[in-house]
Each structure stands twice: as structure tokens, then as C-alpha cells.
Amino acid sequence: MNIVIENGRVIDPKNGVDRNTSLYVANGKIAGLGEKPAGFATEQTLDATGCVVCPGLIDLGARLNSIEAELAAAVAGGVTSVVVPPDADPPLDEPELADRLVHRGKEIGKARVLPLGALTLGLKGERLAELAGLKKAGCVAFSQANKPVVDTEALLRAMEYAATFGFAVWLQPQDYWLSRNGIAHEGEVASRLGLAGIPVAAETIGIATIVQLVRDTGCRVHLTRLSSAAGVALVGEAITEGLPLSFDIGVHHLLLTENDIGFFNPHARFCPPLRAQSDRQALSTAAASGLAAVCSDHTPVGADDKLLPFGEARPGATGLEVLLPLTLKWAEAAGIALPQALARITAAPAAVLGLPGGELGVGAPADICVFDPGAIWQFTPEALKSRGKNSPWLDYMMTGKVTMTLVGGRVVYSA
Image 1 (cartoon, helix red, strand yellow):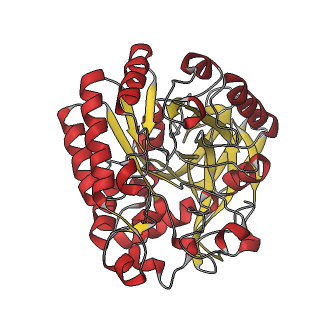
Image 2 (image 1 turned 45 degrees about the vertical axis):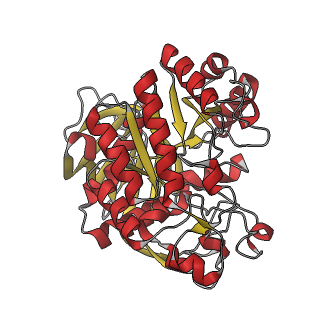
Image 3 (image 1 turned 180 degrees about the vertical axis):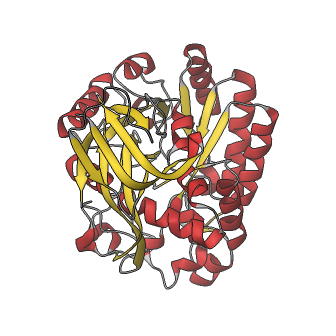
């Protein structure tokens, strides 16, 4: 269908576009910006008065415990592509499982589903999974989710194999022995509350190991959910060295610190944990400078799993429907321009994936988010399409509301 989106502020960070103009869509792709393309016959007109028109958001980390509900939540949040970690039940370690997930996503017809295949069988960190078959089934890269590979030799062999075939590996850096018993950042707050701590060294030792293995193998590695200033510094040095590394930051870590645990708030338990203010500031600087992508780290958790003491509650928070407003909140607090902030959740994730998208250039997929940057709404459980109602932001007022989402030139959400 030929669609024109009129009267909106079109922001395309990758191509340096930020102006009030019209956007033209034909055959599921961007057909033109500003002037109507030759021979374009408008079939549908969408009015974006007072709204921003930007590339659809690409979320580098979203668990889909209930695929129908979570993909509905994705498009309600302007997210048009979701990268799914392999730590499902069962883990995505067989091509048939990955193929089924991709096929089901296409059947639902909401956001695009981009699975990460398990790097090792059962995510046990021992034997290599069937990477070639998983790639053929639609996996965009291979990961252990947040489960470390304790056997460094197994990780080396996995990275050697991946490098041979040009596969990317995604790893959450953490030293198993330093992190296995911890539940909060090792610091003053954890000590005061009597919580077992996870030191920053758990992350930096993990990063140092991975960086050395990247040097040895040439494997392309994306580091997920960095949480510390020291970690950012290490990865920044490796990237400057020219190593094929990238990293992302969970949006909650840009805004919250260990102090937000408050009085044992289970909604503030994350993996990795919320860290010190100096760490949060370093993460913010890394994102603002363009060094890192930002993701929701969407983890829908059942109510019963959060109605537990802090140390027993499952880590994670719902994030798909608030990735945009939380990114806007971070940008305002950090003094970052809107195009620069949107780049972190559009063009930057697309670059990590090496896939088309994250832009509004002619010929790009017509994955589009239209949102009202001034709309104020209350983040309540009832406002969510996700089955996960777990968040430290519950009952807060949010600024920025998605009004329309298009995937492949189809309107898949309209407020």
C-alpha cells in the first residue's frame, strides 16, 4: 500500500534528517522524503501533526515469555524489531526451535523477531550448539544470555568456530566465581542492607577475558548489558585498538543506581545489578557519545516472582513499552538532543546487527515509529500490554507516547 505520513517532524539520525516534512511509503519500503516520488499514487494518508516520525525502535534484548502479548507490547512501544535471547524454556539450541519462533513471529505480524541462538547446548557452556543450522533457521548471532561460560577453553573454541564462519557472538561479561552468590552491587548500600555483593571486578574480569580471546580469534563480539565505569573504559580501549567489539546498556542502568533498591524493592533487582552513581554517569556518557547502543532488557516476570524478599525475587523489569519514554527521560536529564538520543535505539542497534533498518533512507524497510513527545501518561499495570507488570517505574508519570507503529509498511499499532 502507498502511504504518506504528513505534518510530522521527521527525525532520521543515521541520515542527519530533522525537519517537518512528509514521508512516503510504497511496497513496504521508504519511497521518498519531502517531495512525492514520481508516479506515487497515495492510497492512505496518516496525519502526524504534533508528532515525531522516526525509524522503528530496534530492541537488542527482549524476552518473549508470551510471544503474542510481548510482540503487542513491542509495537505499542514503537519497537519494530526485537532481539530475543536464547534463555527460553527450552533454550534455543536447536534449529527447529529457532525456526518455530521466527515462523510464529511472522504469523502474529507485529514486530520482527530476531532470535539469538544458544552458543552451547542447553546454555551449559560445554558443547557447541549447531551454529550453522541455527543461523540457517534465522538466528542473527549466538549467545549465552546471562549465563557465563565457566570453561574458558570452551569459550575459545566456540569463538574460533564462530570467527571461521563469520558468526557474531553476544556475551554478558561476568566472572562466574565472583558473581554466583551476589544479588546487588558490592558497595555501601549492599553492606547496609546485608545483601551479598557482586563486585565490579566480576564484570571487568569477564571483559578482559573476552577481549583477549577476541584478539586471538578475530571473532566479532557484542557485549550485552554493561553496568560499570571500569567496564566501559576497558571496552572503549579495545574498540580504539580496532577490535571487532560493540556493547549495549540497559535503559534502566542509565537512570537508576544502587540507591534505588530503597527498602529492598524487588522491582529494582537486575542482572547485572544497579551500580553506583559514578557507574551510571559513565554509562550515560558512553551512550551520549555514541559508543553504546541502548536496549530495554525487557524481562516480563510473574507477580509471584516479584512478591518475594529481594534476594529471592527474579531479576528484571518490563521495558518494551517504556524504552522510548525512558530514553527521552535520560536524554532530558543528560542534556542530549532528541536525534542523538533516538540514534541509540534505532541506528546504533541496526549497526550492531548489521541488518537493514534503523533509518528512513529511500529503499530502507518502512519500519516507522510515530510518537507524541509531549504526551504525558501514567505507567500503571493496566496501561501495559505486556504480561510482565514488573517495573521500578510503576505509577510514575511518563513523557512521550507512541501513537502509531508501522512494520514493513503496514500499520500494526494505532493508539
